Length: 220
Image (cartoon, rainbow, N blue to C red):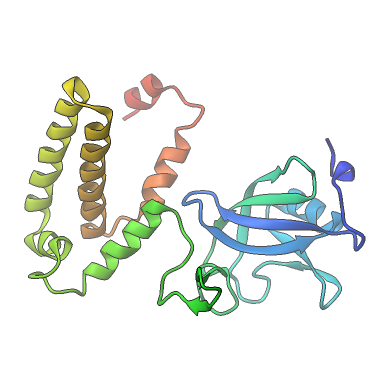
C-alpha cells in the first residue's frame, strides 16, 4: 500500500493522530494532505495541512516544539493515520503537553480536568508521584518515602521484589498482578527520587527491541 492508496476525503485530507511513542499519550490531532505525509516521511518531522491557512505546516516550526516521527501507522480503512512521535516540548498551543486536557462528563458537561490530561496509567502515576513531592509526609506515603531517602526506597524495592518472586512461585494470578503493582509503584518512587524520568526508562527499553537479551547482558 502506498500513499496514493490512502482514502483522502473530498478536501484531499486524512485525519492524523500524534501519539507519544514512549508513553502512549495522544499529543494532538490534525489533518494532512498527500504532500504533508510525504514531507513527514522524507524529513522525519511531523507535517500537517492547515485548513484555515490552506497551507502545509511543520509542527513546531515557530515554537520549536517539534514532533519527531518514528513510524506512521495506517488504520484499516486507510483514512486515519497515527504518527508515533518523540515530542520536543508541549504539543498544544496553550502550552499543555497534550491538546486533550478537558473531559466530557457523563452528564454532558465539558470541564477542565484540574491539571490532569488524557494519558496512560504509568505516565499518570508518575505525574501523581511528582505532585506528591509538595504534599505533607504525614498524609502521603509517597512523600514519606521520598523524605526517607534512597536507603528506605531500596529496602522497599527489595521487599516488594521478593514478594513478587514468591507470588510467581505459588500464588494466584491476581496476587502476582497485585505484587507486581506494588513493585512497579516503589520502582517509580525510586525514579522520582533520583530525577530519572519514566521516559528515560521507556527509551532504554525501546533500544532493546530487536536485540538479543543475551547480547544486551554481555555488553554491560
